[in-house]
Image (cartoon, rainbow, N blue to C red):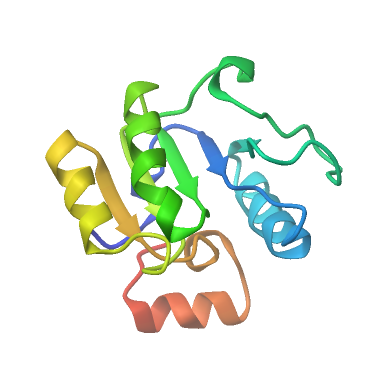
Length: 142
């Protein structure tokens, strides 16, 4: 597993898996920070159809394009299955929000199937204020 930096987000597109209306403020802040840094973000959630102010894709076939990098914010029990789906759809790098989302078995799976994986809040890379301070102490290169 590697430390995150902007280099991890090669290209300028990110698939945001688990964009949730239940965590609307949190998800919106992450998406806005990514967008302000010049990234095109494709939010995806296969369970929720309503409650969003942006277009949220329900599955891979709806996406205009599948980016090579994904940010994953799903329940830990769903992470391994999501990794397999992401690999099948051409994703090469995954940033997991935290170790509750990606346990060691999930990270091992990523390694086995050739997906670069990292764990950390994307706000350490894309955010400002306290996020920058957190990034500094976490060793994140901005």
